[in-house]
Image (cartoon, rainbow, N blue to C red):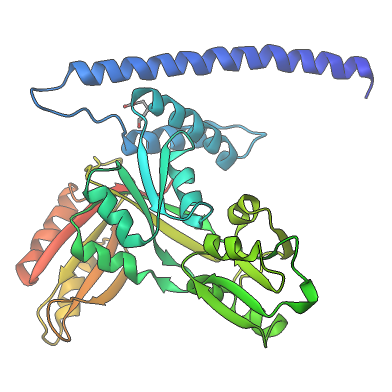
Length: 364
Ligand SMILES: O=C(O)C(=O)C[C@]1(C(=O)O)C=C[C@@H](O)C=C1
């Protein structure tokens, strides 16, 4: 390519960037107007709701439907995700607590869902994320809820039994683990590998094959594992890209998870009810009396009404020995007439039924 051609193309890019800049600014001014309208239409004592997950899901879906390339749909939606995140920050900077420390997959999930224009706060434990949200110190919390290889995150499920929380969104992340070492690590003398217990389990076969005699040490998070390795010459960590970048570690082996489709699902928790978008999911907790056929009774109304169950999990109820609660996710919104009917039917049979929330299905 000649120098002249390159120059001409860069001039075109400069002109396009100017247009993009003007359009983004115009969009941001529009968001400011939206904030003004929301404030003006408040009833006495009502608090304004700036963050609208149902609208955000619609915007991102529309972008993906209309995108003609060459950028892929997900790439384009990620760009719009960030534009919307910045527009929302002009209306109200959101505060989001997540399972920390910095560099965890939960932080990556929070950024994927809310974008980077939020004030994020790392918490030391899942229960602390719940408490921070319940105390009103942040607007939303982000916690992991299930992994495709290792199953449910029980701390999260149990926290729902203790706190009154509304689920307002979900996000799924493909989880890639790497074996990370620091500058001073002697790679032929590794005698200890740190990681979160779930991540060690997700890489069990790889570890058995490559480091069968090395001690595996479970720590509170992958980011904590990465942090420890930084100053140790005989240890390595299993963690993801964010932690590697944050602690300046290098990858000794990449993508070492046993299953290539290893993914984790995260939930956004808060106190805000989300209206229907037409493509929603609902999460409920149900406890049934301890009698034969109770689970069958619980599932029949879903089957009879053609409602898709996406997950069912059982946990001890904590209120009596050998009594259980069921965590159920299904497709639909609790305001849909069909779903309403099913929930009414179940509540006639159940000891207790709680709707944790209805929220748009993950778009990204
Ligand atoms: O439509 C709204 O209610 C807005 O506040 C605008 C906007 C956007 O930038 O598109 C910003 C924040 C909301 O969470 C949803 C959408």
